[in-house]
Length: 143
Figure 1: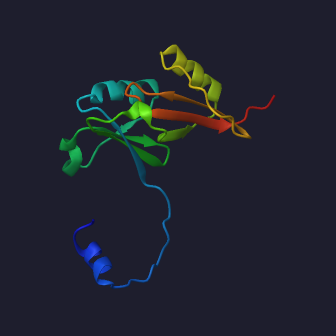
Figure 2: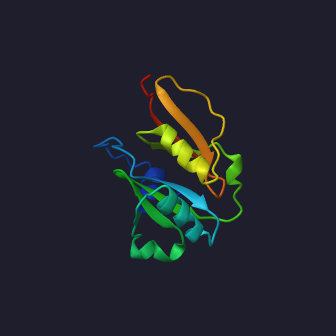
Figure 3: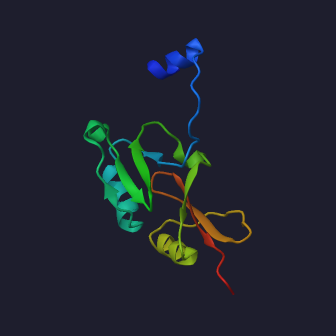
């Protein structure tokens, strides 16, 4: 349960008129094991080429790192005791050339997983070094 002013208003039944709907997604977060940031940076910043962005000072001591992915952010947090390889939860990265990404990741030892075809899209999935599922998706190539 939340604490503070927002939850107090909810619990006491005070109503506030919604002036705006949810307008988008600011960031998504995945986790890696505690102390695995360098391996994470090698994969996400090195192999995938995603730029790391500074974390706010208030959060800098909590481990992990943040990435810029287009207009959105991916926050890589640290968490112990998670069976990442057992979940279907994933991020889907939009790419222009799905096959090039599939070949790049396979060459680096990240084999594509069997996936269900989607009409109009080329796509594949793989797992990062920690077991997180990733999807790479783009419009179906002509021909």
